[in-house]
Image (cartoon, rainbow, N blue to C red; front, side, top):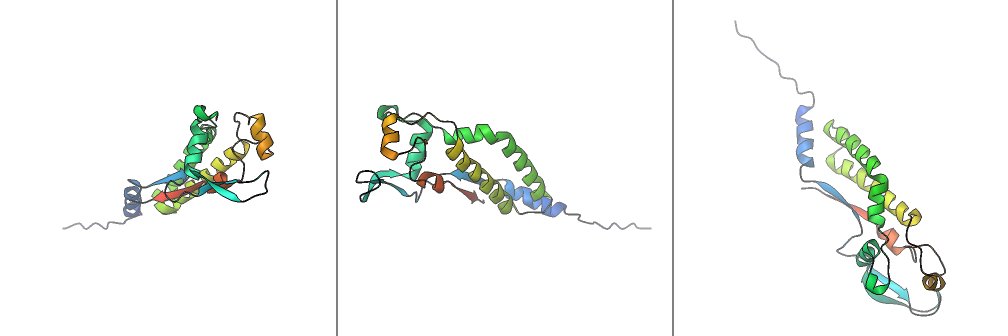
Length: 167
């Protein structure tokens, strides 16, 4: 008497494929390096006058703000680090939830990483807008007409994005 077995895949193959897809895939959130927009400044007084390039890209400006430039009198205003410190527990919980969704086949790896990227991108933009930073100097406030650090034209905040890398 021979016995036969029926193997029923209850989603294990799909889960294993999803986990393999996670192996070298990731999401990056921040300011784009390649193709980063040029930072422009007003060539006149106030908001009147032609715009001219500063020679900086938004990515370089972000690094200057994150770490400061003591030689140029610019204090560190670490919006990336502050985002992580503020939202790290929520980021871990969302990552765990998305991992469960990926391994159960509810979402693809790309979709899960995209959701994480979009969410974190929003948190970083919120930090730029509402974070606690070294105040602007009186002269900076006079020149730009605002006491809000990190926000002048809004270009840097608007340039924060995410990119999913699948390997």
